[in-house]
Image (tube, rainbow, N blue to C red; front, side, top):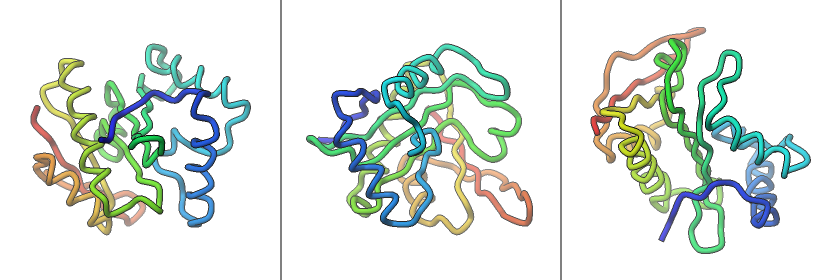
Length: 167
């Protein structure tokens, strides 16, 4: 059964395998908060914990989770506690990504469902999510979790779909 877990050094070997899966695919790691340029990892994980309560310039507080199934990190999720004007248009409350070797197994749908529980616990009555117009898999995940499409936005000629999920 999949669960959300905060990053921890106890899972360093599996985390590095997670990052390697992305590198081998040639894709950009999603969400960006789980990038592969951070060393030492202990300092990075401490920084993630700090960002849950401390606002940095231009950012909002947010929580980063790993999606874990058994002993394997299958994805990552970033939950933004608040939204800036830019996030209302192009980012939303929740960003997630499934490691390339674990896609098409329902992990994104399950992970988003768990993130919605976190949003409810934080007292939100709805969340906003976005995805690229060509990201049909993410659109299906959002719709499967009750997403209702609202007006899209366009930046640099690229359309972004926007969804509200009532809680």
